[in-house]
Length: 197
Image 1 (cartoon, rainbow, N blue to C red):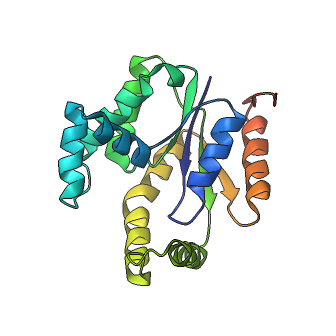
Image 2: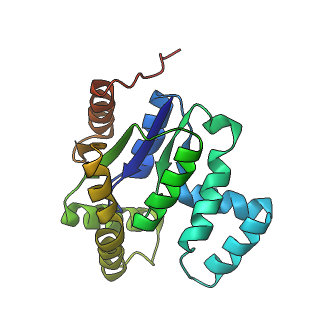
């Protein structure tokens, strides 16, 4: 049973590392974006609500986000644990996740924080935008997203620090180096990686 969160600013590489770490510990990587897309594709009631909000260009409210994530965590593949990426996004969502896990008599094992300097995040996102031909990732937009992260998401780390769950990882280096740092830090906390077949 491995229950993890991965947190970091945009451009920290948490999506890529999240998938690698989830594989290493044999749990599904659950990103809020993927969950929303799946719910919309599903055409469920929740999905229809999410679709309308996203199409209007608004952020999905906490209650609805938490409901969609709860539904995903109730699926069979997440019974043995999970790695959440992009949730909880703020302190209200931390409370929702706490309630859900308490209801299942479970708790988080660790919160992986990828530490990347702000200017590095900005240059990584700008590079990605260039490579993918994304015109919406202007420096102004990127800086705004990082400000939202600092204002809304960074405070959740205080909550998890108080519970001694946060594992600080230097997010600079090659993909493999960073993955190795995360795996070593989690193993040091007693988590067991899945043997490579």
